[in-house]
Length: 226
Image (cartoon, rainbow, N blue to C red; front, side, top):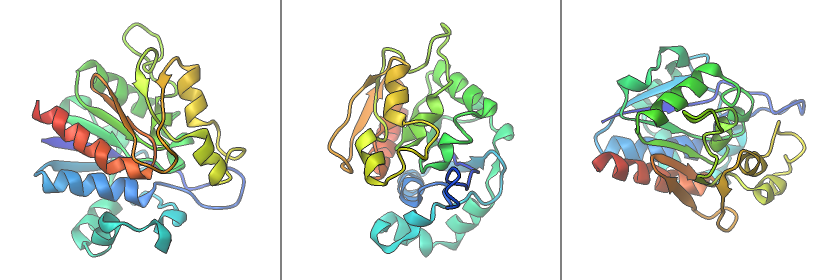
């Protein structure tokens, strides 16, 4: 099994002067889910190298078993510090694609032509494609084969407006994930804030928040097993 994880290279939280990036749990939980299943993992980002970590995801209250494992795993840390550039990634080289969230992807990956092309070709090939928390936002400009938004008519989940309100970034982000998915015609649904909630639509898997990252990764493995 060859799985590629696509991380953000964007580290500025709008014009707040604060840092953002990827959310640690949303990387670590899927990473170890795939490692423990024996997958061959590639890590990529638009700029390559070390992707920026959202400092809030490194705070004590945001730690999980997977993040603690990562902090004691020099091999995983080295892999993360050396992501390959997104322009070297081709859908035909992988069995599945996974996008961890964090706020960063809303700025760079949502607008990245290589990311859009990777998603479109992965989806068209019927390969599992999973995105969690803010990462469903990278589907903003992605089109299906018929030219309509990829999410149109599909069951999707993603970070909720109320969760964004809770972290007080409603007016900072370039767009709200929930609103965008609805505007693009997705059949958006959600669970309780901060609780695991994952939706599948064919080979598309979307998860609502950090707690949904491991279940989304497990769902991806189930698809691969089929």
